[in-house]
Amino acid sequence: ALGCSDRSGTAIAKALPDDFDFDYIFGELGVRWLHTGGIYAALSRQSQETILAAVKTAKKYGTVISYDLNYRPSMWEAVGGGYPELYARQLSENRRMREMIREAVRVYPNFQIVATTLRQVKTATVNDWSAICWADGNFYQSRPYKDLEILDRVGGGDSFASGLIYGLMTGQDPQKSVEYGA
Image: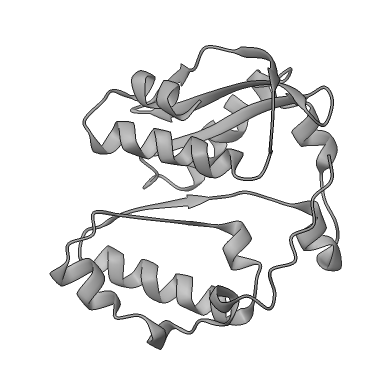
């Protein structure tokens, strides 16, 4: 499967930090969770500045912050390309992903939860799919979905994050939350 992330001219790519009242959003309204990610950060210099302003303000109010380290080789080709072969091998190399997560939490000890989907791409419309989550020093893995037929790949990571976040926000344990995500 091949996607084209042509979002450079979109309104959100052109949004500036001053376009949002983050103190109102996180302070007065009390938004409890901010989720953003690498695709938004890759859109423009303005989007990078907007993410930084949102994260700083969210942190000031004690808002939970999550960041999707999603990577799209086509978006980053101008700065050296990608590692698509790593993503194609994720499911078969579950141990490697666990090692990467252990290293991330060693380097960034403030991480409370780290999660990722594991996808073995068989064809553009058939994948094996599961997810893992690290929390409190333990790993939790969803049940595997073998030969999952995909109608539209767009948003798979966002839907995973939504399910995981829902589970965590409603007080579910990490195992149940990673199952919701998967």
